[in-house]
Amino acid sequence: MKNAYQKYKTTSIQSASREKLLLMMYEGAIKFIKKGLLATEQKNIAERGLNIGRAYDIILELNNTLDHKVGGDISKNLEQLYMYLTDQLTQANITGDPQYLQNCLKILETLYDGWSKAIEQLKKDNTEKP
Image (cartoon, rainbow, N blue to C red; front, side, top):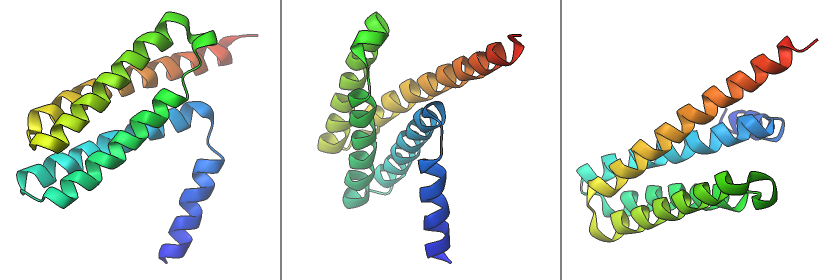
């Protein structure tokens, strides 16, 4: 059963649009930060580190996908924000202070919400064109 789920998951990722992949990456980072927060509360250092590491990797990938030629100031600002997030995650991992993870969570949820609305509007605009 797990093998079938893994195949489904792989297929859904490979066939997703760029916009959907972006949202999936944010969803993953948010999920791992929440798991990191839970592990922090439970004083499970290994689990905290594992989940922070996963969120960190996703944010680095988001940063690597920025196209500064097309994105201009927006991509520069996102790059600074992603670097801030990776610093916050590093501090959370070193200190075990949940405040760093909560800071990241707020930012990522705000970005996710903004991208969701922008993608929705873009789809709406494209369907209204003659």
